[in-house]
Structure formats: C-alpha cells, structure tokens
Length: 122
Image (cartoon, rainbow, N blue to C red; front, side, top):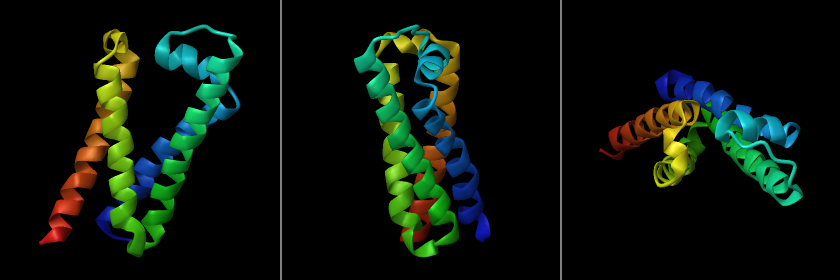
C-alpha cells in the first residue's frame, strides 16, 4: 500500500466520519458549531454537507487501494479541507475550540496531500 496509501486510508476514514451527520444532523451541528436548531432547511443543508464530506472520505479510502486515482483524490481532499478552513477562519466559528481543532486536523491532512503531490511531480 505504501505511505501515501496508508495516509489516504487513515485520513479517508476520519473524513468519512462526517457522514454521520446524515443520520444525526442536529447533534453534528450542536457539537461542531454550537448550534441547537430544528430548522428544516438548516438540517437539510447539514445532511447534504455530511453527505458530500462523507463522499470525499469514501474517495480517499478508495484511492488508498487504487494508486491510479491518488493524485486527483488528494487534490479533491485538499481543496475540501482548505475550503472548510478558510470558511471557518472567516467566520465567528474561529472562536470555537472544537471547530478549530477539526480545522487544524484538516489543514494538516491537506498539507500532507500537497507534500505527497509535490513529491510526485518531480
């Protein structure tokens, strides 16, 4: 599997964990964002976000076992993680410790993807 495969497997599993929000959107919003809502549109968007991030996690897991898609999967994963970080940093959520811990972990994962991609460009 190699180092990049292990990286993708571990980070893919962690990323796919956000998919739990498909089933428990209220709890996800409360834990990550400190938002206690029952507003149907917000819950729908939370479910959709959870689905998309869960699918990115699934793609990363798939790429762990299929070297031919590792590059594109790392680009997608890094883009998702950097985008979330930028959005959180530009919002009041940057004051939430748990949310910032997740953004920090995502940033480390994204930087590792970039490092692996840069190493393979040579």
